[in-house]
Image (cartoon, rainbow, N blue to C red; front, side):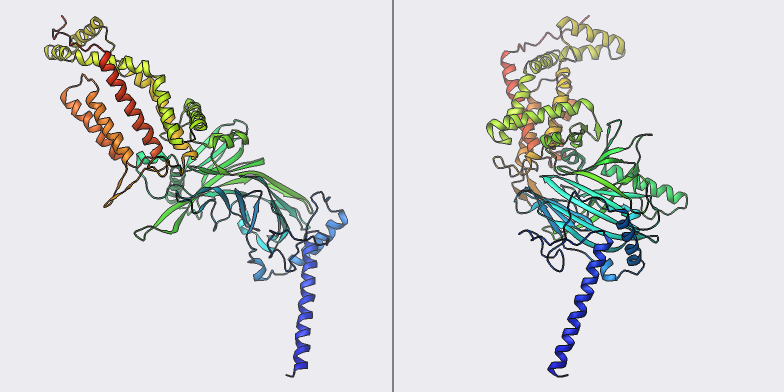
Amino acid sequence: MDKKGLAWLLALGLSLYLILNTENEKINQKFFGIEAQAQAPQQENADSALSEDNAPATINADEKAPTEEKQAALKAVAKDALSKEAPAELAQAELPVHSLSVGDNFVLNIRPGQGLKDAQLNEYFTTSEKDKNVKIGDQNTPSFNFSGVAEEWQLVNLRVKEKSQNKLVTEAAYTYEGQSFAVQSTWALTEDYHFALNHKLINTSDKTLNISGLYLNCGYVQPVQMGEHGFFTQQAIGNDQAIDTILKKDRKIETHLKHGIVDDIKDKLEDAAEEGRVLKDPYAIYQPEEGDSFDWIAVKNQYFAFIADTSDSFSTVRTKTKEIISPLKNEDGSQDKYDLLFAEGQIEDFKLIPGESKEVALDIFAGPQEIHILEKLGSDKKGIMQLNMFMNMKVSWLGFLSEMILKALFFFNGFVNSFGLSIILLTITVKLLFWKLTNKSNRSMKKMAVLGPRIKEIREENKDNPQVMNQKVMALYREEGVNPAGGCLPMLLQMPIFIALFNALRSAIELRHVEFLWIMDLSQPDTLGFIPGVPIRPLVIIWALLMLVQQRMTPSSADETQKKVMMFMPIMMLFFCYGMPAGLTLYWCFQSLMTLIQYKLNNRTTDGTPAPATAAK
């Protein structure tokens, strides 16, 4: 072929391309009921791949609903367009990820037509090296998209309709069971950790559209602490993955822990197997009380959370886990496995006549579990923190005490600007509050120790008559003015405070990646190095030694066997608590040190003259 023929061929091909491209754009405009508008200049940070002409169409937020004539034209064009089989490349198209932000601290990364890839928190880091920002969500499984029956919808067209720094509008066309409809999704970021999402379903067919079994994915969250943990370490880090729901009328927060969700799914599978049924995709299903519904759903780990608050409500919630193999390799070449936990809220069944639409409006929080941030959200959302939970049980008064202690920690930090010093000041404050009570306890235990030989004498003389033995022991207590519970009662009264301290320190994200002395991270064990296979953690070792000294100093009326058992206790605690976070072991170390100081002061002032070893008659 000569040069002239080649030029004519290229010109013909270019003309066909322009014609087809123009017609395709017209169909898109008619399908979504949008008139062509003047192209606005793109913002500097807008993605260059929004459309082929690099200038996406925009809409007016105040645009009125289409007229009846426009609706009729819309349905006619949509019916014609959707009657043809969608090209494979269109149905499988994936637009580039779009990022929204209002500042430097918070970025939403969105996959158009699929959902939220992840929320990036630039003030928080995955490790104490602070080389990688925290991202909530899972890049391979987008959040806040429709699920359930939506998994059977066939995609026909997808486009970005509007994009700015803090707003993204996408439109997707679908067919399902011979009917056509569109979903317009508007993402609007207003402030850090907070954004609005509106999914608008539009019936573009000429028949009534029935939507049943539609769910909304409320977010995927992976654990903060990877790997397996022992019982005591698990208690120290709290429940790293859980789902919270709140009843719209009753305002009761229900917490579903990951291990409980796994057990519920296992029970469903076992029941189905016994009945000869096969569950293709089992979920743990949670239903509200009769006449009630769920106001919001929170998917959380130890420090971060998604909270999806809907303008309507969720009729039921279903949850599940998805096993993931971490792409990061450990020093030995192994890869950690972890579960992604997610929840889906069910949308009430609804019908749409031709041209009618329904909006599913969401107010979403994606950020840290800082109490002052959650308080501002209202609607009882600060309840997602684990301040009222101990040993996987909720205790109402514990939440109030833990919150007060947490706020006291922040109060001290406002003066000293060091959370390590704040923990020490908090420990001193609590110890001083119970100083007099502990003094009484120490005196009571010392008196009991002094009376030990006489009590032993009574027990040996009356070992064949327990009733007489108990009467004589109680008479001795009355004679000497000793309360046998005096040594334990003060400790029992202090236990709620100690538990609340435990809860507050393990829940405080403010301690995460905070250094103090040799400690690199107050939320992790204070590992200094390794003796082949064993980490060296000074704080928990010091705490065990202080417990050992305390055992030797504490007066006791126990026999030799009981004393030996008690002396073994620090070794057991060292073994069980070796993986505790440094913030907790710092508190325990300083608390034990102050207890020893108080014992020493008591020994100088308390009369320790032994009572005569004469049995009471």
